[in-house]
Length: 391
Image (cartoon, rainbow, N blue to C red):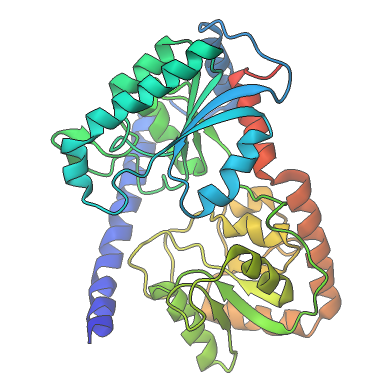
């Protein structure tokens, strides 16, 4: 009964939510046009370099940065970011997980200021031993106070944030009048890394300096294995409305999808097991829905996902919803396959399964592209270069 009620509630909420996000994006575009603001990477790089140069940082030799990182290391961040950052030098990490199992409102009111003091004291102590080059932050305004960020800037440290879910806007609401997302913090970072091209104008309107790059994958984790491909069609990820709808739609057409992740019969899958299963799959399905309330395959809003890079890094054939930004990073039809409707999905699966040479061609092409251009190390190397902290 609960599941049925939730489905019907989401069917009502989803069109409203999508319409609100689309209206917000159109409003941002109109404001940007009125002020003649547009995202130009070369101009942004120059602004970032000029801002950081005023801090009089001395770029160290390549890959020996001192990086102070702040993020929650649960999930994919803990699997990927520590190893990647260590490739560039010495890392001191401050765990952003104080309220993960509690009430964010009470944490915000009772512990936020104290945690920010601990964070700043820890950074200052490490900075006193030897200059810190970079402050890296993945979080929101809920956790980090603007005064803390400004104090870090005053130490002469290059600062940058990471935003991987910016499509619905940079303002997510307020507690006691303070923004819980990045809208108020963004202008005080030297660079705001966003994986959403559509968000760049919003950052610019706020007075921030966005830099657009997609997500990446870690080839030490997501790797190609020599295994028999005994799983025809697979889906990986937590079960929720649109993913269940995808599986049901294919089942109704006679195509069985093996599912792996929380909420499915498999339960959560450890990452090493996940990589093994990806390598055993002939076709891996994806869905780029951005809405948290989606219950059908119809998508008015899509965005890039981490799986868009992790699956190709394993050398697997990836079939996901079409998103315009995905076409910037892969050759659609040659490296990644896409669909818009359940009928598209059905037809594409049948075509691929009946053309094994095409499957092999895609596997090789997507693996080569992923390794050549889409590792997390390449992403951070570009960001550090834009900041001007690497010689």
